[in-house]
Image (cartoon, rainbow, N blue to C red; front, side, top):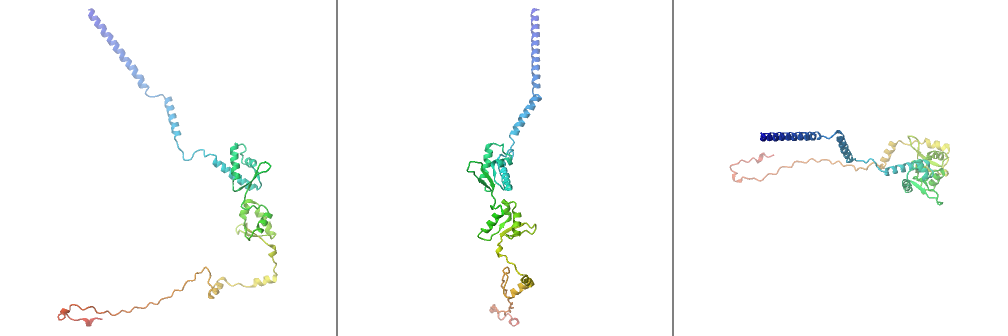
Length: 286
């Protein structure tokens, strides 16, 4: 019986050990299946990292920061318009104060000053005593007063006129001064029909002005001028053609000559070897 007891105890121990192994395998496999999906917090973190990487790889056609070059040239345009409206020299400090750039860095201010010094629409005057130089608008014509206008017109070698638009480029009040000089008889002015604004000006020489008697004026006004069409007809009759009319060569009409039909010449007679058999119908030819 001791042998059977030993076998029974050995079997029970093997069964208990195998059941323990199976239980351990089951407990190990269950957590593995549960940890296959990460927690929600880790998923959000991975999505944020992926989104950041995609944002870093985005390429735009126009960068968000266009730089300061365009900003500088915009400020230069404002500065030139300010100099044009003022008409008087301005220092760099005054220009920077107008543009609200007095608190910008020194390199930016030096860039503004350098561009203005070399601009074709700006005159820069240096101070010999070491003071701050001045900037002034450079117009097409350096004319800003009545005396300067009359001096310019009288010093010209020809009687060429000046455009009022060009005068207003550096002299905003030019038109009012032109009206006064015209009333004084010192200027000859042409005006626009639409708004009667001055268009061109010439110097007027008062010594060439003469007063004509009323008698001669009435005689001149009584002279009747021919009608334009009648005058043109008389000139053409005299052989004088206007320059804009081409002198066309008259075409000669050719008379058509009717061609007479020539009589048909007889052809070469053939089949002479059958003269006794064939009949002669030559007398029937027309």
